[in-house]
Image 1 (cartoon, rainbow, N blue to C red):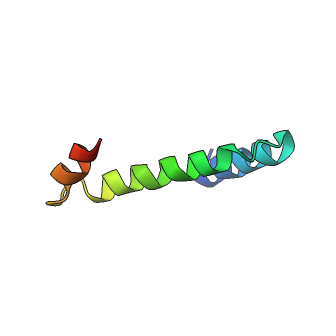
Image 2 (cartoon, helix red, strand yellow; image 1 turned 90 degrees about the vertical axis):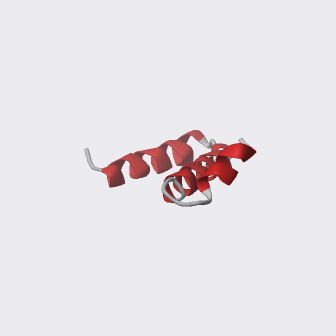
Length: 52
């Protein structure tokens, strides 16, 4: 199972079940996870972790 198929399956779930309110939550979690991963080795990491 590729990573692309997971997103395709998630999109089909949202479309069929009409769960559009989940989309902003999922996007926020993806962006937050990307921010944490990208700043993991930088000097900004202590400031980002202090926020949470």
